[in-house]
Amino acid sequence: MKILKLYIIYRVPIIIALIVFGIISHIYLDTILAWICYVVAAFSILLYFMIGTMRLVQLAVTEGDVDSAMKYLQLIRFPKMLFKPVRMSYYMLQGNLAMATDDLGKAEDNIRKSLKTNSTIAGDMRGTNLMQLGFIELKKGNTKEARAHLIEAVKVGIPDKENLAAAYLQLCSIEAQRHQYKLAKEHFRKAKAAKPKTEELVKQITMMEKQIARLPG
Image (tube, rainbow, N blue to C red):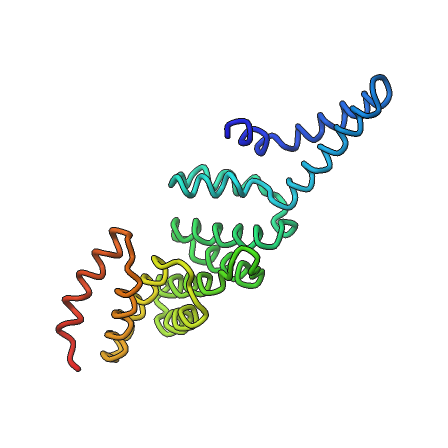
Protein backbone atom coordinates (compact mmCIF):
# COMPACT_ATOMS: atom_id res chain seq x y z
CA MET A 1 0.00 0.00 0.00
CA LYS A 2 2.88 2.37 0.77
CA ILE A 3 4.37 1.78 -2.69
CA LEU A 4 0.96 2.41 -4.30
CA LYS A 5 0.57 5.62 -2.30
CA LEU A 6 3.99 6.87 -3.40
CA TYR A 7 3.22 5.96 -7.00
CA ILE A 8 -0.08 7.88 -6.96
CA ILE A 9 1.39 10.96 -5.28
CA TYR A 10 4.50 11.11 -7.48
CA ARG A 11 2.89 9.85 -10.68
CA VAL A 12 3.80 12.93 -12.74
CA PRO A 13 7.59 12.82 -12.06
CA ILE A 14 7.44 9.03 -12.52
CA ILE A 15 5.81 9.52 -15.95
CA ILE A 16 8.47 12.05 -16.94
CA ALA A 17 11.24 9.72 -15.75
CA LEU A 18 9.76 6.80 -17.72
CA ILE A 19 9.55 8.84 -20.92
CA VAL A 20 13.11 10.16 -20.53
CA PHE A 21 14.45 6.67 -19.76
CA GLY A 22 12.46 5.30 -22.70
CA ILE A 23 14.03 7.82 -25.08
CA ILE A 24 17.51 7.05 -23.75
CA SER A 25 16.86 3.30 -24.10
CA HIS A 26 15.57 3.83 -27.62
CA ILE A 27 18.76 5.60 -28.64
CA TYR A 28 21.47 3.85 -26.65
CA LEU A 29 20.11 0.64 -25.09
CA ASP A 30 17.23 -1.65 -26.04
CA THR A 31 14.16 -0.82 -28.16
CA ILE A 32 11.97 -3.34 -26.31
CA LEU A 33 12.89 -1.78 -22.95
CA ALA A 34 12.09 1.64 -24.45
CA TRP A 35 8.60 0.52 -25.53
CA ILE A 36 7.93 -0.99 -22.12
CA CYS A 37 8.69 2.43 -20.60
CA TYR A 38 6.45 4.15 -23.14
CA VAL A 39 3.53 1.78 -22.47
CA VAL A 40 3.84 2.10 -18.68
CA ALA A 41 4.08 5.90 -19.05
CA ALA A 42 1.00 5.99 -21.31
CA PHE A 43 -0.96 3.81 -18.85
CA SER A 44 0.11 6.08 -15.98
CA ILE A 45 -1.02 9.16 -17.92
CA LEU A 46 -4.46 7.60 -18.39
CA LEU A 47 -4.67 6.84 -14.66
CA TYR A 48 -3.55 10.38 -13.82
CA PHE A 49 -6.34 12.00 -15.83
CA MET A 50 -9.10 9.41 -15.37
CA ILE A 51 -8.69 8.46 -11.69
CA GLY A 52 -6.29 11.01 -10.19
CA THR A 53 -5.72 10.59 -6.45
CA MET A 54 -9.28 9.47 -5.67
CA ARG A 55 -8.08 6.13 -4.32
CA LEU A 56 -6.08 7.95 -1.64
CA VAL A 57 -8.97 10.35 -0.98
CA GLN A 58 -11.38 7.47 -0.34
CA LEU A 59 -8.89 5.71 1.95
CA ALA A 60 -8.38 8.93 3.95
CA VAL A 61 -12.16 9.45 4.26
CA THR A 62 -12.60 5.83 5.42
CA GLU A 63 -9.94 6.40 8.08
CA GLY A 64 -11.58 9.69 9.14
CA ASP A 65 -8.53 11.71 8.09
CA VAL A 66 -10.27 14.79 6.67
CA ASP A 67 -7.08 16.87 6.33
CA SER A 68 -5.37 14.21 4.20
CA ALA A 69 -8.53 13.75 2.11
CA MET A 70 -8.62 17.47 1.33
CA LYS A 71 -4.89 17.47 0.52
CA TYR A 72 -5.28 14.57 -1.93
CA LEU A 73 -8.34 16.18 -3.52
CA GLN A 74 -6.29 19.30 -4.23
CA LEU A 75 -3.82 17.18 -6.21
CA ILE A 76 -6.53 16.54 -8.82
CA ARG A 77 -5.98 19.32 -11.36
CA PHE A 78 -8.41 18.29 -14.09
CA PRO A 79 -11.63 16.96 -12.45
CA LYS A 80 -13.63 17.27 -15.69
CA MET A 81 -11.36 14.64 -17.26
CA LEU A 82 -11.96 12.07 -14.52
CA PHE A 83 -13.77 8.86 -15.46
CA LYS A 84 -17.49 9.65 -15.03
CA PRO A 85 -18.24 7.64 -11.84
CA VAL A 86 -14.94 8.84 -10.33
CA ARG A 87 -15.84 12.44 -11.23
CA MET A 88 -19.23 12.02 -9.55
CA SER A 89 -17.53 10.76 -6.37
CA TYR A 90 -15.00 13.60 -6.57
CA TYR A 91 -17.69 16.29 -6.59
CA MET A 92 -19.69 14.50 -3.90
CA LEU A 93 -16.66 14.29 -1.59
CA GLN A 94 -15.80 17.94 -2.30
CA GLY A 95 -19.35 18.82 -1.30
CA ASN A 96 -19.24 16.71 1.87
CA LEU A 97 -15.91 18.19 2.96
CA ALA A 98 -17.18 21.70 2.25
CA MET A 99 -20.24 20.96 4.41
CA ALA A 100 -17.94 19.82 7.22
CA THR A 101 -16.33 23.27 7.17
CA ASP A 102 -19.72 25.04 6.74
CA ASP A 103 -18.80 26.33 3.29
CA LEU A 104 -22.38 25.86 2.11
CA GLY A 105 -21.97 27.68 -1.21
CA LYS A 106 -19.08 25.45 -2.26
CA ALA A 107 -20.89 22.38 -0.91
CA GLU A 108 -24.03 23.08 -2.94
CA ASP A 109 -22.04 23.85 -6.10
CA ASN A 110 -20.15 20.54 -5.92
CA ILE A 111 -23.19 18.43 -5.02
CA ARG A 112 -25.05 19.90 -8.00
CA LYS A 113 -22.07 19.03 -10.23
CA SER A 114 -22.13 15.48 -8.88
CA LEU A 115 -25.89 15.31 -9.49
CA LYS A 116 -25.40 16.57 -13.04
CA THR A 117 -22.65 14.02 -13.70
CA ASN A 118 -24.74 11.12 -12.30
CA SER A 119 -23.26 7.80 -13.33
CA THR A 120 -24.95 4.51 -12.45
CA ILE A 121 -21.80 2.42 -13.10
CA ALA A 122 -20.87 2.51 -9.40
CA GLY A 123 -24.52 2.59 -8.30
CA ASP A 124 -27.18 5.28 -8.57
CA MET A 125 -26.14 8.08 -6.20
CA ARG A 126 -28.81 10.59 -7.28
CA GLY A 127 -30.82 10.00 -4.13
CA THR A 128 -27.77 10.56 -1.94
CA ASN A 129 -26.95 13.78 -3.81
CA LEU A 130 -30.51 15.05 -3.41
CA MET A 131 -30.36 14.21 0.29
CA GLN A 132 -27.16 16.25 0.63
CA LEU A 133 -28.83 19.20 -1.09
CA GLY A 134 -31.67 18.85 1.41
CA PHE A 135 -29.25 18.96 4.34
CA ILE A 136 -27.52 22.02 2.84
CA GLU A 137 -30.86 23.82 2.51
CA LEU A 138 -31.64 22.96 6.14
CA LYS A 139 -28.35 24.51 7.25
CA LYS A 140 -29.23 27.59 5.21
CA GLY A 141 -32.64 27.74 6.93
CA ASN A 142 -34.60 26.99 3.75
CA THR A 143 -37.00 24.40 5.16
CA LYS A 144 -39.35 24.35 2.16
CA GLU A 145 -36.53 23.61 -0.31
CA ALA A 146 -34.98 21.11 2.10
CA ARG A 147 -38.26 19.22 2.40
CA ALA A 148 -38.67 19.08 -1.40
CA HIS A 149 -35.14 17.70 -1.90
CA LEU A 150 -35.48 15.13 0.87
CA ILE A 151 -38.85 13.88 -0.39
CA GLU A 152 -37.39 13.49 -3.89
CA ALA A 153 -34.30 11.77 -2.43
CA VAL A 154 -36.23 9.03 -0.62
CA LYS A 155 -38.50 8.65 -3.66
CA VAL A 156 -35.52 8.16 -5.99
CA GLY A 157 -33.86 5.87 -3.46
CA ILE A 158 -30.98 6.19 -1.00
CA PRO A 159 -28.94 2.96 -1.08
CA ASP A 160 -27.18 3.47 2.26
CA LYS A 161 -29.42 2.60 5.23
CA GLU A 162 -27.70 5.10 7.53
CA ASN A 163 -28.32 7.99 5.14
CA LEU A 164 -31.86 6.77 4.48
CA ALA A 165 -32.63 6.82 8.20
CA ALA A 166 -31.08 10.31 8.53
CA ALA A 167 -33.23 11.60 5.65
CA TYR A 168 -36.44 10.19 7.16
CA LEU A 169 -35.57 11.63 10.58
CA GLN A 170 -35.15 15.08 9.06
CA LEU A 171 -38.46 14.72 7.21
CA CYS A 172 -40.09 13.62 10.46
CA SER A 173 -38.82 16.73 12.21
CA ILE A 174 -39.91 19.01 9.34
CA GLU A 175 -43.43 17.54 9.20
CA ALA A 176 -43.79 17.81 12.99
CA GLN A 177 -42.92 21.52 12.72
CA ARG A 178 -45.56 21.86 9.99
CA HIS A 179 -48.08 20.16 12.33
CA GLN A 180 -48.42 17.32 9.83
CA TYR A 181 -48.31 14.76 12.61
CA LYS A 182 -49.50 11.78 10.59
CA LEU A 183 -46.71 12.30 8.06
CA ALA A 184 -44.20 12.87 10.85
CA LYS A 185 -45.10 9.53 12.42
CA GLU A 186 -44.90 7.78 9.04
CA HIS A 187 -41.41 9.18 8.37
CA PHE A 188 -40.30 8.19 11.85
CA ARG A 189 -41.56 4.65 11.30
CA LYS A 190 -39.52 4.41 8.09
CA ALA A 191 -36.42 5.85 9.80
CA LYS A 192 -36.70 3.22 12.52
CA ALA A 193 -37.32 0.47 9.95
CA ALA A 194 -34.00 1.31 8.28
CA LYS A 195 -32.31 0.07 11.49
CA PRO A 196 -29.30 2.40 11.47
CA LYS A 197 -26.22 1.35 13.43
CA THR A 198 -24.55 4.75 13.83
CA GLU A 199 -24.52 5.74 17.50
CA GLU A 200 -25.70 9.29 16.78
CA LEU A 201 -28.67 8.11 14.69
CA VAL A 202 -29.62 5.50 17.30
CA LYS A 203 -29.67 8.25 19.95
CA GLN A 204 -31.75 10.52 17.71
CA ILE A 205 -34.30 7.77 17.13
CA THR A 206 -34.54 7.08 20.87
CA MET A 207 -35.09 10.78 21.62
CA MET A 208 -37.49 11.25 18.71
CA GLU A 209 -39.56 8.23 19.75
CA LYS A 210 -40.45 9.95 23.03
CA GLN A 211 -41.47 13.12 21.18
CA ILE A 212 -43.50 11.19 18.58
CA ALA A 213 -45.43 9.44 21.35
CA ARG A 214 -46.65 12.86 22.59
CA LEU A 215 -47.87 14.04 19.15
CA PRO A 216 -51.65 14.20 18.63
CA GLY A 217 -53.36 11.98 16.10
